[in-house]
Image 1: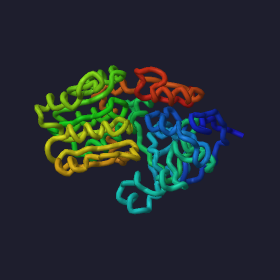
Image 2: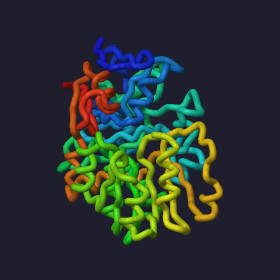
Image 3: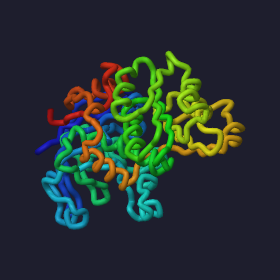
Length: 368
């Protein structure tokens, strides 16, 4: 029997190699041969958590080639064997209100947080047939309701591996916060998500981009400037609020994008203070379960709009691929390290800071 090698999470911070049977492919399904599984901060947090519904093949930023496609799959999806594609991690119902609005990221069928039966690549239990629901594997199963995008020929698979954070940057900065010509922006955190926001904001025509980080982020802050940031601030050696007020002549910024991956309340508090006197927008990501003494009075007086970051839509992914294809920005600087399937544990920990301070985005190569 032909098998598929995977790196599967079997417990908190525990991963092992395991083989699964090669699945049969129905007429409306397909099989993708993996090339690159990108690893981000979400993987780091998820890896540390105990299992709740069975072992999981992680990997939700997936690039590969259609190895086998059923007749109806090709007919309905427009993809055929040999196509190199980016696979979104959502597997939605395509029937509900959210799906009909094109906002399938909010569909209950792919919401792993609230729906134990939800399917999402990198999060769904491998106990669920046909098992291959994550990119830390040689092959990934594609049902009829997966979401695919064609990767441009002039974009390498490793570079295409950053489509997810770049699409998030486009979704959050442009679509959610309306950043455009002459906008002034504070981006907190120079990780792969923060650097993607720099590109999105610069491409949209932002007039001023400020990026904050810590002393260990020196290389990342340097890359932020290369990608288009006008100013960078080391919050451990400078007073960030004073510096922001100095840069903006006391006006503050239009939009604050929190890309600190839920580092705590300090980023939100700084964001509230750094926003302009009236009408700014604060976008928050991460999961803060407790926020004592939240400055609701200041938020209302300053007329601040608070938005939450939540994934990306189809158009944002298409724009991200077009951005990569343009090669306007040296985004190769973000794709810093590669590992093989047997080194999945090291790869995840590398993104979490346990390998080198120069690590930004890691590519797992299942066939290396």
